[in-house]
Length: 292
Image 1 (cartoon, helix red, strand yellow):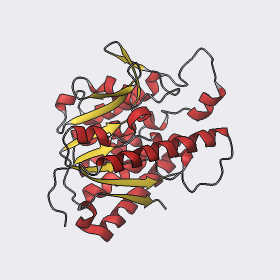
Image 2 (cartoon, one colour):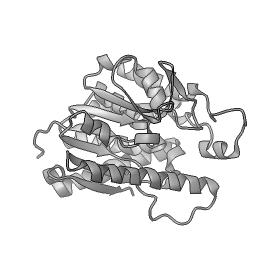
Image 3 (tube, rainbow, N blue to C red):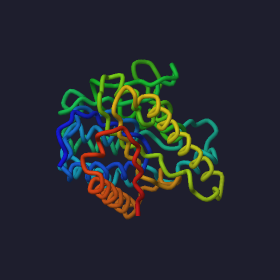
Image 4 (spheres, rainbow, N blue to C red):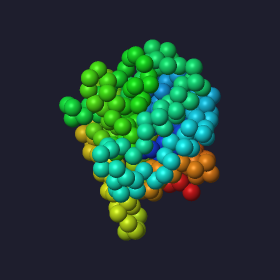
C-alpha cells in the first residue's frame, strides 16, 4: 500500500500531549509505513524519538507505551505545574519541580531500551534544546543521551536548566517546538512530522489565568510551526500530522487520560491512512487529527 521512502521523522514537543504522538506512531507502524531514515525531536518528542531511533518498529512503539504507563511518567508532574509557576511557590527558585522527576522518566526509558548513548541507536537522532546563553537552538547528536534529553525537556519554570559544556540549556520548544528547520538543514528531502500544539483556535474563553497562559502558549507554538512549514516546504516535501488537543492537555498525566489519548490518536491516524492511502505522502500538507 505504501511505497518505500527515506523520510526524516520530526517529533514536536508538548508535555503530556506526547501520548498523542505515541498513538500516531503506533498507527503508522501498524500500517507498515517504512521506518524513518532519521529522527529529530524536541522535548517530549526527543524522548519519544529516542525510543523510535533505538527500535524503529511497532515493537519499539509498544515499548514506548509502556514507558508512558510507568510510575515515573505518571508522577513527573506531582501537581499542576503551570499553577505552581504562576503562584510563585518560592521567589528564589527558578523551577517548580526537581530535575529528578524527569530524570527518573528518562532512566526508565533507557532501561527498557538498553541504550544510553546516541551511538548505540539504530537510527541517527538529533535532540533539540535551547542554548539559553546564545538564545538559539542547540542540537545534540552524539555522546550520552541523558544530558541531551534532560536539556530538551527542561520546561522553563517547571524543571531546572541543564548545564552542558559550561552553557545553560532549556526546553527546545522555546525556539523550535516542531524542529522542521533542523531536519531540512540536515539535508532531508522528505519529512513526516507529528506536531502536538494544534487545538487552541476554537476553544471557549479561558476560565482563569492558568488557562489563558496555556492557550496562548499553544497558539504561539502551533503558529510557529505553521510559519516554519510555509517557509520550508519549497525546499522539502513536508507532511505534518497534528492531533488536536485542549490547551490544558500539557500537564494531564493520569493513566486513564493517557490511555484514552493514545488510543484516540491511533484511531484517528489509522482513519486518515485508510482515507488517503499513499496519496497522503505525495505532496506537502498539514493534516489535523480530531480525537474522540
